[in-house]
Image (cartoon, rainbow, N blue to C red; front, side):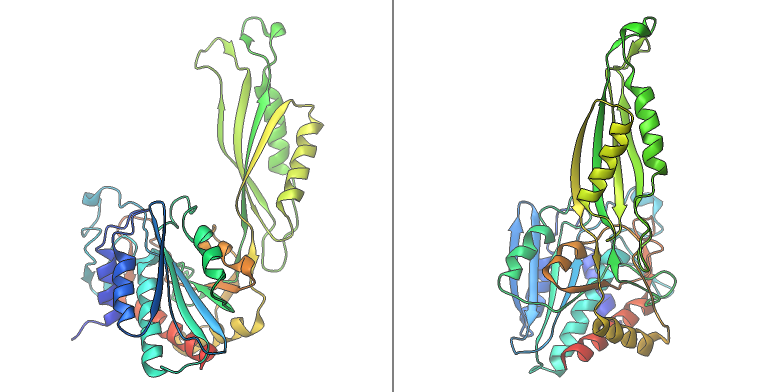
Length: 377
């Protein structure tokens, strides 16, 4: 029995060692493949990161952008895998390999869906496109964040579907209609260094900082909304001291992260944090780093058509939610593009023996193809 083309393409991508930020030739191979079928491409490199937009169509009408990434996380010890992690081994209807679920399998499904649609509808209205980067799993500074402003000067898109592995148990059971924002905070609480035997001559910032951290952990930042849980705050790193057991530290630094709903913003969170810290009379230095603002798709037409495509392929009514971390969708949605996420089952992402059932890739390809047809025909 001949292997489905989406599996062959997924295997070819898996076999390329595209560990962030090295694309390892994935983007070039896809550009070469699709250009032979009438697609156009714009390849741009920032630093060590490859980015590309591959598209077809220039007539008036709706435009759909697929968004994905070719980079993957490290494999860890290859000997801990049942099969070589970059082999793309298929056994008992399951495709194994680093990145098959996150997200080379979805990229292959996008490519096949686009090729089949254009092959059947060469004069379609609107535009269908695929945007890829090799910097999603890493710092994400030289990927879509920089590439999207460049593309937005020349291309307009109405809809964007991100291929992140959103599905929980079976393909199509879960669609992300948004993601929470991510805001990093670093607080350095200042005290006075001294000898532990003479605390009267020092000011230990650890004790006062601990009270403030407890207050931050218990604070209710917002109530969330129907699709977003309330904003959460977590401490990720704490550092203090000289390493000597008899020295009271002169400062303590702790880092935290907000995963915030659209009911909050960076200014509102900053204001609340300062109020709490000032309430304890602390002397402190406070810095912020915004990783991404929240996005939320409320486009009813897009939601309906994606739901219909999923139901037609699976008989499953998808659940819409905003769970998980950040994605590159946060760099697309601010341009007024209705953005959602649908990809493969996420049970094994970033794990040893990352895998995906072959039938899942076929199902996802069918959903993508149906969605293009519904939006562009």
